[in-house]
Length: 300
Image (cartoon, rainbow, N blue to C red):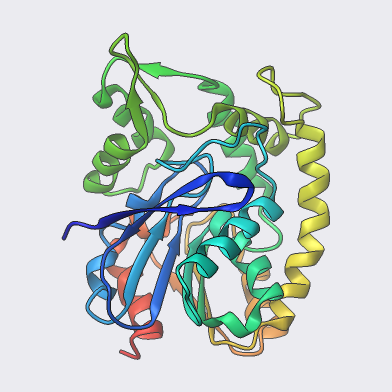
């Protein structure tokens, strides 16, 4: 399968990159997590494309979507992009399948527009994240703050460390789609390094401002704390069927928080725990992930 590439206006005058995999059926929109991009879903797409109009978004500052000139990467900015995208494409009702950062964006969007959601799949994400996972990300980013690579193979070696359970095919796709080549021949991240660096500092609790300007780690921590309460409140407003997917070995979403989401906050919540998977559930165990989500969105 090969997608059609759409350029869609987001908020603040930026352009968003969207992969459209199929045209018929209820729209199903895929949202990736921090530092990934839309192709992270490539292995999952064939399971749902025959049944839904499947779209995958590069979040602002990621993939082939624009970087924001003033480094506007707070949750409200991402929600505004989602609102603009759904409005531009004329989507009356949509199913969101969203991982990590995308999951948190989808919760806030759903709280503001519950009537727009026909269904929601929250993949290893929650209003409150396990400190083990955020510390790990901070450590990984600090070790590779603004790297370049001689080849995509060099980046694959880093990815194998960061995604120890991911399948080789997923590692190759990430290396293919998360990098761009500079004029000097070296490869660098497509992701805005200002966002990457500031999130790394914030995740580690560091009092630091990104040297390239625009993002303050302390401000990000404050924003995350404020957004945490808004996310819990958003879950209570959701009326659509909602599936929470947790990797059994996840260091981001612990079992107690997942249970609280499903048992206490969501009106129509279900939980699926995917074995042999960490935080990046869809790359660690793609077959079991597709089976779990397929039972939910396809009624299998």
